[in-house]
Image (cartoon, rainbow, N blue to C red):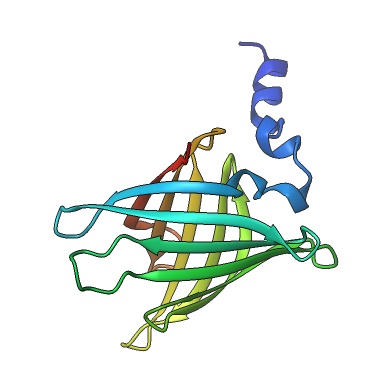
Length: 168
């Protein structure tokens, strides 16, 4: 490998991100998705996520719903609004769910990964960084990881992984 080819490999941006305008980096997510994951007890779970563009196609609205664990139980539901702010040149997302959860995220990018990141204070008063990572993105599928860090982002723990498959 020549010095030039090493330089180009290390410093050439990813074709996926470099070919996409910053305000369109989450357009891959728009659509109707079938979701699968394994819960903490090892049970297979399913859900659905409908992602649409609203407000003159400037805002991405997420509508998440998990299939109820059993008949008579309530499904976990959540909704987010994601928007690119051209002044700050950053993505922002606000998430709220049926269990009273609320998060305010900022978009980040690392290689081909697209992320929303936030910092919260846990019940023990310690700061915890949380991030959702969209990775292995193709036209009809991707993986979404929910991760946490208690050491300022030096290491990350996988808390939840969802496999997205575009609904046919």
